Length: 559
Image 1 (spheres, one colour):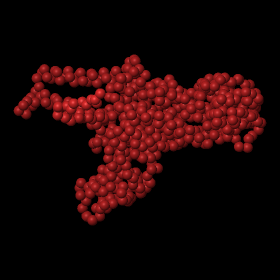
Image 2 (spheres, one colour; image 1 turned 180 degrees about the vertical axis):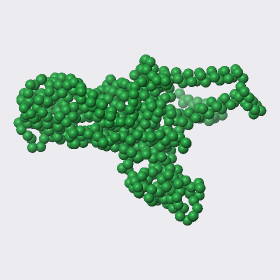
Image 3 (tube, one colour; image 1 turned 60 degrees about the vertical axis):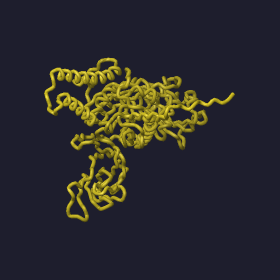
């Protein structure tokens, strides 16, 4: 059979269909107004100039001889030379490498070396800078008339730094990062948390505060097989800075995370993080706790990145009950896009002008019918917008929230002024809790048996040991128990087996020191071991990770 050949078309060839331009991932027409981190304080030394790119433009960061940090446009207004390529810092000024023009840190030209006259227009674009708590921020605004609102200073006197981190060039937007903090429904699928819920949310000017809680798996903080109850107080300062105060109530441990999202361009950001923990009585315990929290933060926070880098921002998402106060968050965040609000107002004004103009250019009063129709149209538009936001909020909550005059804020009080006052109040409440509230949280291990004394615990330690939890463990655990029931002993765990010995080991992996009677209560599930160490009633020397492992190797009653 002959091979078939299709006959050529008699129609003239046509151009291939034009590819439709991809819609932008983010609908915002400008960068959000507010404070944004551009560096950690340690990144720049006096006399240094660093090149940066943020908000779609070239910038330079430099530190003057006085120690003051400054941020300016990167190119000299004279002939366009780049200050980071050969420029120098003199005093608190920056000098251009091309012709030597010198500018103060507020942008004024203070010297032209070869002229006794400084041109009136010789001004370098200088950015408002705020350096505090180890971070250098700039204030982005399209119009210099826009208000530069304050960024509160944080109390760090009782904190120990765990670490700082920079995640560069993430393909997302600050709006997405901050929205994540009110999206309680993602905590389960992404972070393996349970029973997540938002307890309260309120906006106050440029600040938004959210309180939420959930149960977090202990694996990320070296406590496998456990659940920790976590309470978060989240404060947003614009859409560039988040401060999260974390309270692990089951362990009596507090930490603070700070998150900074800064636009590089329309769909790329630099993301910075700072982690610190509340100071404990034992410096070594505090140091290792800070390391554990830092590692946990870096590991857990990065789980959101694949979602952020591949999702699209939906202006009208389809929400369900339990999604969190996303509508409230978006209404609050809209204030940081003033150019969009102005464009909408200009469009309405232009439309009103067209309706009231005649063909000869004379403005005439619109007819009563047009006035009435225009008013109806505006009311319909306003009602539609209100309904959109309200439905977003009510689909989340499923009920009418108690609110103030704006109709979008739950009624509760906020105190932005004093971190230490809030912490003290919380500590007092925790100190007054009953012993039953301090009981050891449940783990995935089987029940242990109660004991009446340290001696009984020592004699039954081998029976308490859980070989299945000892995979990969090669360590010496030592108990130094004081008081009337005082006793010192140690256990060697290796290859899934245990040997128990009287007295001290010459090189224990971890030492647990506590009053003997208190330890018996910990074993019996009447006291929380982590609370004992955090409060100073117990001490840990050596590896905290190994100490946490003891919870699964030698489970307490009810664990």
